[in-house]
Structures are given as C-alpha cells and as structure tokens.
Length: 82
Image (cartoon, rainbow, N blue to C red; front, side):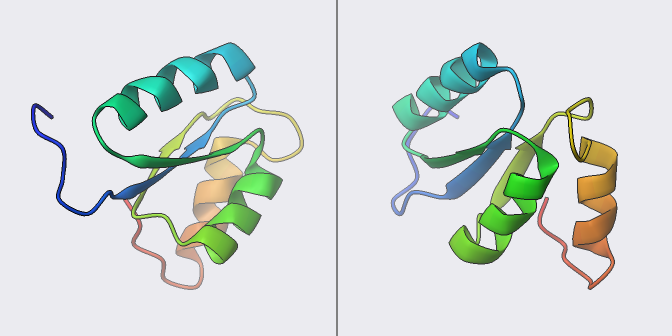
C-alpha cells in the first residue's frame, strides 16, 4: 500500500473497539482510502447496503451481532465483498 489509489476505494471498518476503529481508519485514510465505520454487525449490515463499500475489515467478537453472523448474512444473498 505504498501508493494511493487514483479513485479512493471505500473501506468499511466494523468493530466495537472505538480506539481501534480510529487507529485503523486513520491509517487507511493516510493511504488514500475512504473509510466508513460501524460499531457492530447490525450497523455494519446497514452500512453495506447504504454505502456500498469495496472491502470490509470485520471484527468477529462484537455485541448485538458478531462478525461471523454479519458475514453469513452478507453471503446469503450472494455478496462477494472481500
């Protein structure tokens, strides 16, 4: 990731650790990515549908809906977002 993409790719960061989200988001923005954040899987699924990210950085241990459940729900209708 040494050079920024010409058109920023959209990254969704889903994690309930707000400090970690800030750190990861800042690093991704420094590399030229557009970052969207969600604090749990429920909000993350909503963000996938409203913001259409190109890739998702997903924590597996979260309240309300964990990362595994979010991933299963994404894959059910055939989503292939990495």
